[in-house]
Image 1: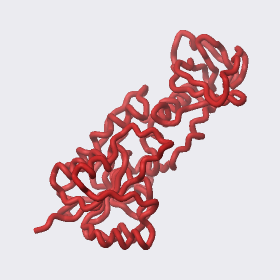
Image 2: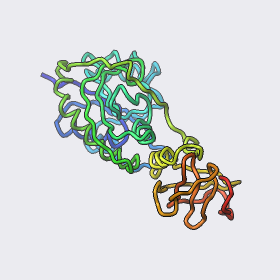
Image 3: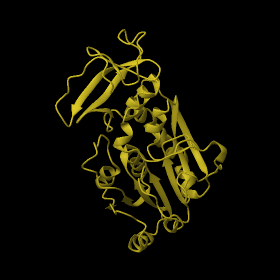
Image 4: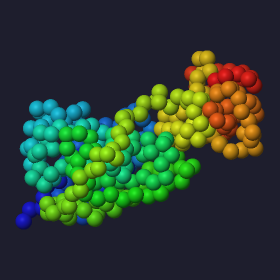
Length: 301
């Protein structure tokens, strides 16, 4: 009997790990639909295209699959099952309805919390202590379908988003490994999400890294670690120059007992800035767009 035909939508390291698992198992992956790498994005992860090309799996990178042409091409692939892992575009219901074994997504949060884009960055920004991966049925609304399985991991309050991502990454492969046979035989057990516990967040833009000094020191620290390298970073503008803040410290000898107007420079060496409830020491910074300005104690960023 022929093995079920799997159409894999995916990107990022999570997509690479999950597709690699299927290929190692010898599952019948008929094609990969993915994204072209963005030249403006720091690609710090393996992508599923690497795994697919090693096994001569066809790779497609359409701008949108929700066109008549691509719906026809996908229908012609005759998928029995669709699996989406960190694919960045919405897949229309006409495509989701094609496979007899359903369409399933691996989402980077412990649903129903953090539906939407960039869930790990948002979780770090909000100071969550635990994050995870959830396998769920794909429906019209993003990340809203019934859940099949999930696994979480604790993260440290000083972890960056990349460090958190690397901690949670193995959860996706383990969840898929537990459930893939049930997916391929149509025997998965689904649990509806608790709508009263849903949180949703949209995609993040570089501008979202602007520091609001009226926030608490902890909130600012969480922003910095959520968007620091390899992400676009947190920043404050000083005239034409942009001060990128790649790291800061909440508690250091230089911040003890320091208070001031939010954004006020309290010290130059080391660079200490007042927040809504205290002060932070900026320990790793970079100037962009213009020559570094001459900062002065008492100046407000």
